[in-house]
Length: 387
Image (cartoon, rainbow, N blue to C red; front, side, top):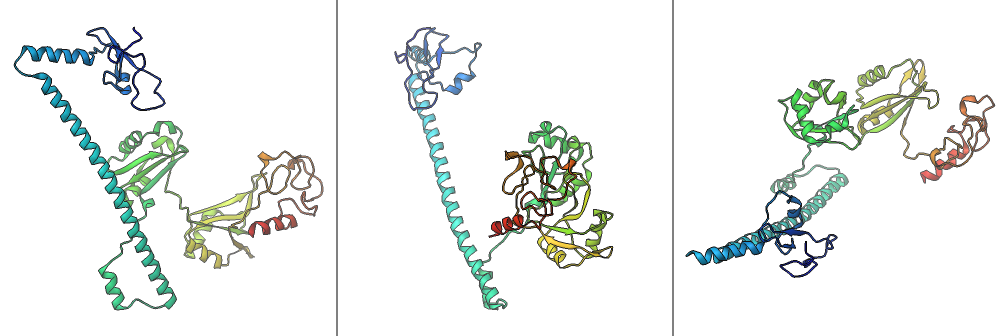
């Protein structure tokens, strides 16, 4: 292999633009004249060089042009002019495609700007109309309705979450990482269901978008347990739900029975679960209820009496005071704590399982545990965060 390209007569290939691979020169050998040349000089890109192998037969551009001139001199047809014309036509077509794509991008950007401005105008008019209706507390007159009919504002109320099915807790999530594999699994059990698209989730789950709500419900009921590695099929969780805590519910009352009682009171719930002790795992007399905003308002106005005991219904607090489980101080987590261990109940240096001393708070020294809501230090921390 020579160190000089026989086309440009240089060691380094000419650079048309500066890239991170500019220092790398791709060399090729012509199988016709056995000369070495730069890939850039021969009209080959770096992607073309990756496709070449030792089995490919390669001819340089000089050999090609020499064959064209030789055949044109022997025959009546001027092949060199025909080849030149074909090259010019191809360059013209490629330039037209580039210009057409740039025009399409510019048109789409201008259309987006126009639609955005129109959306802003519509939203401002709608908000102004709402403000007028609420302030005057009156209905729209006939003239105003006629004007609204001339320029109607269409608002889509379709919820895309109604067509989504989520599958979690898959035993072999790597087998369903591609959309093709997910669609194959659905077609294996429910081939009549039309799927819009499907994809894998970040934590190993699967999301399936159907064409309508009925197709989603069909998948939810007809997909067998062994499908998708025994994963749990459920609807997407509503992030707009409100959490309500009900304190004083006897542990003998199951969450299913409590849900049925709320249904009789026309209160629909999303999830009802009982809280357990962090150390022992024993069930507590507290239920955590997730429901919509409207149902939460009804639940907060209700009075629930169980075994002659009135339950306390509280909405989830927006402010949360963080307590370290290692030193029992406020403001940091246990995994970032470098202080000495202190018991939650007696503030000693032992674990809570071996606690037998009198109850004493590690923060204020009172006769309560460090997790008590009556601790003055906790109350002051809560007031600071609430402000």
